[in-house]
Image 1: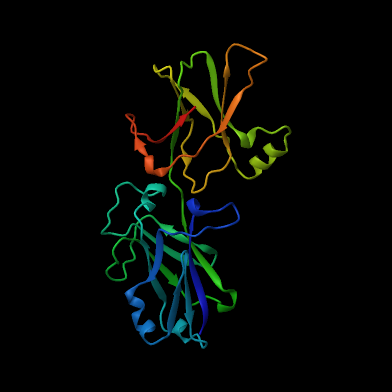
Image 2: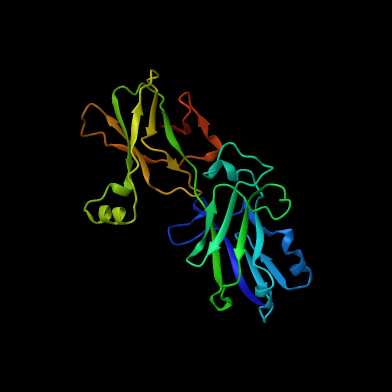
Length: 272
C-alpha cells in the first residue's frame, strides 16, 4: 500500500498564524458508502486524524482505472462549529449544504454552494460531500486537497463598566498593530492585507458604562492576541496622573446575539 492523497480541513478559526494550520476538532471526513466495494477488498485504506483523512491504495494503482470518483462526507462532530463559522443561518440538517471537487489546477477543493452530489444517504450531521477525480493523481506528489472554511464575523461591542461617573474621563480603543514609531509596520500590514480595527463610541445614558462598537464586522479567533488596548485618562490635565491602559480580550462566539437592527454582534464586558 502507498499513500494516494490526503483530505485536509483548513479552518481560519483554527489557524495558529498565517503559515501554520491548526487542528480542527469539530469536523471530520469519512468515506462514503459508495467506496465500500474497494474498501472491503482492501483496495483502499484510510487513516483518520484530527484534521485530515489520509487515503492509501495498492502499489499497482489499478483502482485508478476502475472508477472515476471517490466520495467522502464532511461531518460536523460538534455543533459549536456553526457558531464560529461563516455558514448560512437557515441550515437544513437533513440535506448537506456544500459539495467540493478537485481540478488539475487547484489543490484547494472547489466549493459549490449547493450539494448536487449525493452518493447515497448522508451520515448524520453531514454538511457536505467531497468528490475526488482520481485518474490524474500522481502518488509520488503526496497531494493534499484542502477543504476551506471561513470564520464568522460579527460586530464586536465592548461594554466598559466603571465604579464612578466617567463623564470627566476620555476613553479610546487603540489597535496596537498600527501604533508604530515608523512606517515599516504600516508597510508590512498593507502587504499582508491587515486592516486597522476601529471602534466608535455608542451614545449611552448610563454614565458608569462606556460602549464601543467596531466599525466593521470582525472575525472570531480561537486564540486572542495583544492587539486591542483600552486607554483612559482624566479630561483635567495633570502631571501627576498618567494614562491608564489595559489589553482587551477578543469576542467569544458563545455570546453572539442579534440587535434591534438585525445585526449580529458579540458583547464583551470589561470592568475597571
